[in-house]
Image 1 (cartoon, rainbow, N blue to C red):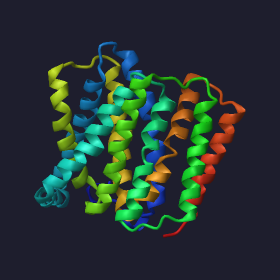
Image 2: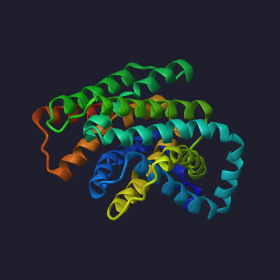
Image 3: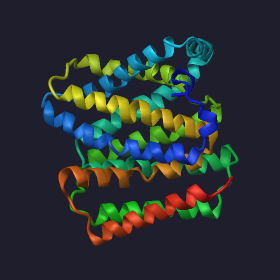
Length: 298
């Protein structure tokens, strides 16, 4: 994880790779979230969202303040606290609060799809305000991925959810889409120092609804929360911020729209579901869209 872990990220920097890895890792969110609720009946979406963010913040503190150079970066970024306050609200609070709540009311594939479907906002905002080219290749890749995800959703049996889950997932996705766009607009970069401030403000925001209905998870739920912290929370956000730092916001959003494919495949492997012929066609369309974005140039 950048200088704090002794990795030369710039030497490996390929934003499309970062975004794809983020999509793969983020595909595990629904699985760990669903298991956490099953292991602890009293666990609320608010409590789960708070603890996975706060524990991530504590780990980032250990990593950041254990390295002198990273510690200096954290202190230097403090002068931009208002930017991280906004980004922490959009990318952490909105995403974690609404997405986790949505998993409580709808199936994993549906929530994953709706969360990233809102990402179309990023594509168009980036074209108008960041002057990123809205190329035919980008649009074809985006619609190929969306068509593939629709195939997965419309013709698979384990896709269900009420209006509340639908709305919550869209709200979480809208917050995340605006986070990607504004992160690129403000040029905040990516790394441990940035994650420190994002998780700090995210924990602060999430603590308000959490302490209103305080609850400590128990048993195996903690293991699921730790998995969420290490993989999608820290790992996913680190990769996403790096992808935004080195690449176009629209490209990052389009590639991460493939998240529902990985969420569906993981759910299928763990819960034993088998994709239908239409599901395989949808998967193929998503892979075609990803390949188009990986090969496209700026």
